[in-house]
Amino acid sequence: MKENTIVSLADSNYFELLNELIDSIKQFDQSKSIAICILDAGLTDEQKKILSVKVDEIKNAEWDIEVPGFKVRGKEWLKSQVSRAFLPNYFPKYKKYLWIDCDAWVQEWSSIELYFKACEDGKLGITQTMAPGYRIMSKVKWLFGKLAVIKSQNFKHAISSKIGIEKARKLAFAPHINIGVFSLEKNSKCWNVWQENLKQTLSAGQIFGSEGLAINMSVYIDEVETEFLPINCNWIASNLLPKFDKNKSIFVEPFLPNLPIGIMHLAAGIWRDGKDMRIDKSVKINIETLDKNKVSKSLRYSSN
Image (tube, rainbow, N blue to C red):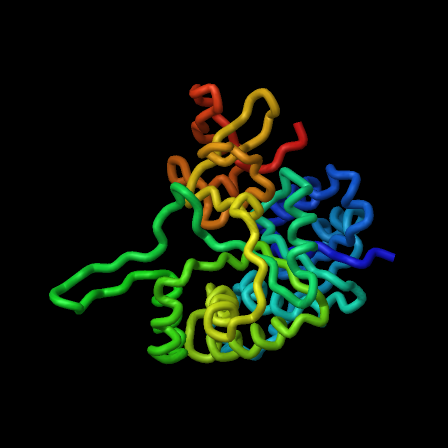
């Protein structure tokens, strides 16, 4: 019996990305001992049929926390903002859970091993969106004296979700945590802490981003035990493009020692001429190579 699982979610629009994520996992022999479970947020019957021969379980995603209907009508994909905090309820027979957003894919199996190691003893395994050269997520505009306007993703979401100014201040300059890839054991206390924070963020704030704010609250305010992993375990390409190693045919970090990207994450999209690479696989961009040339490439998974 498979003890651990990798979980993702998609609707029909993101099916191709989900299918590529699954293929990127299954390219490694080590994946044979890991279950792959899918939450369905609007896949077609034909798409589910294709997935059924590749994965272990497919379950319908639900609204695990009640949210106003007008906020989510026609937006089944938003269930990912709630359901990922309740993975043991959907797939109860596993010991460890590794969530990977469907717009990410696995290049190096070592990152998978790190996530499953990181969540031992109830810890949360996750990365912070900070690295050499990464886009700055927080900004301050000084007005006069000690008065300043704070602009940060955490602070903005915290204020709109009405979690209280003291909590918002604690989150304002904390390194943002991206919830697109994380690991937890089934019996981790973090699930309950996260769920309670999620109830609070959903009650007043927007649906999108609510679970991210809730996990940042869990780490920085409730201080759940966390194992922070290297940034190549969740490389967000929209923050900083990788380089390409032509000799090994892999994407690598753009700064020395040019470590291989473990999990490539296309969060926020990679855009060219108004087209998002996540939706249109034909979109390519110029990527610098380690020998200081450039190649035109897609950042999506390819088995070629």
